[in-house]
Amino acid sequence: MAPTPSQKFDTRAKKQAASSVPRANGALIDRIFEDVKGRVENRTLDLGARLPSVRAMAAEMGISNETVLRAYDKLTAAGYLEARRGSGFYVSPQALQVGKPAESHPWSAPPAPYTWDHLLHARSPYGASALGTLPAEWIGTEMLSGAMQALAARPPTSLFEYADGRGWLPLREALSARLHRAGIHATADQIVTTAGATDALDLVVWSFLYPAQYVLVEEPGPFIHTQRLLASGLWILRVRRLDDGPDLEQLAELAEKYRPKAFFCSSVLQNPTCTSMSPRKAHQLLKLAEQHDFWIVDDDSYGDLLPRAQQGAVTRLAALDHFERVIHIGSFSRTLSPGLRAGFLAASGQRLEPMLLRRSVGSIHSSLLSDQVVHHALVEGGYEVHCEKLRKKLATSGKALLAKIRARGWQAGDAGAGMYLWVSLGDGVDAQGVWEVLRADGVRVASEIVFVSHTGNARVRLNIARTDDAMLDRIAAAVDQVASRSHPAAGA
Image 1 (tube, helix red, strand yellow):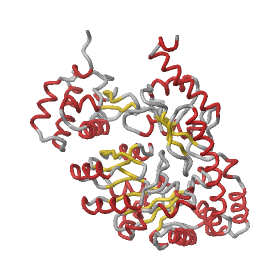
Image 2 (cartoon, one colour):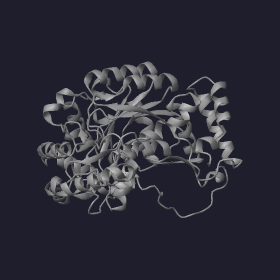
Image 3 (cartoon, one colour):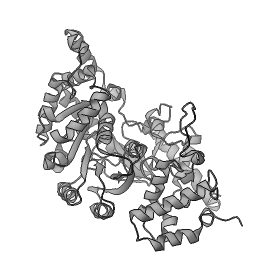
């Protein structure tokens, strides 16, 4: 019988590493890193070989899953391993080139079928549910068309000059007024307009974080956040997202062990779960941030879709913290247009200084045209009425979709707000098999593989506005097909 990947990976060496270093500390992570690196370089681990799963490695070494995951993430960032969503960690085909002069090759897309780009461009007839946007007919063109017509009638002189590095002042003043209504007291000088929430995230990462630092993220959480942090050489600590916010017990344990620099989260309508943080948990989180000296990036990209009836039940972190430790990020991509690329961040003056410096040598300033379009929508275009219509449509469609999902025996939380339903297809379902069947059938879905480091349940994020009966039928057929393979007698 051929040896398993675990047997190939020298069990004796792993146990020596575990016994010679205190559990769950940085030295053990480095020891695992050096051991794997050495085996790759002396070719006792083949290129393309699959490493033991995080859980299997941790159990065999008698250490925590987090310790093994940190070591694997470090090896991935260094170029020795590659992570394949839903499959595990493999020795990178380019592992032997680490540290050598790079050759000039044209860029090519990563081979993994489940990437951010995969969701962003899911335009096939059976891929709409994977998108993170609302349909054009929901958003409508009236508001944007009206804004463009109004701007065309004005003297365009402002478009021929460099703007304030913070963004167009009238928009920042309008954003300041909106934030005040949400309990966040930010002056116009504390706000920077950006090319969407992703641009704001980039400014934060570039300005404050460096390779080999620890940061906390929610799991499940936005795929692009995790990938952006990993691409920057940061070490990811994953915190479970519960119905009322992050698992603070787990967060406290990780913060105590690893002293992370920052926590990336969402207090309102988190992606993909569409859950919001309770006021009690928000207060506790800020206390933990002070105790363990980390700061918080609160992504409020979906906050404008929160129904008015629920707004009193949530508390945005910046409203409690007054920008002592919180950087607040907002976006209009979900409500106006994803192609507009309009967002903002709000922070203390001290934190803004390094971000404005980065901005000045990067994009210089945000788009004046986008800033003026958003300003017109907020001040003259009926933006609040527009958002209320979207909320009502999502509420009605969400309840109908939830009923259909539960009728099929699947599980999902109540469709209280937001764009998504986070759906479990059932215990024991082979998630990887389901996604492979769907992919072969030309169906793109935002599966659990995109949002978590390793799958434990077959879950999928369904876009409420873009999921129809045909999509549900195709998912159900894939589940049945995979089940019949696993239990052929049951399908006979």
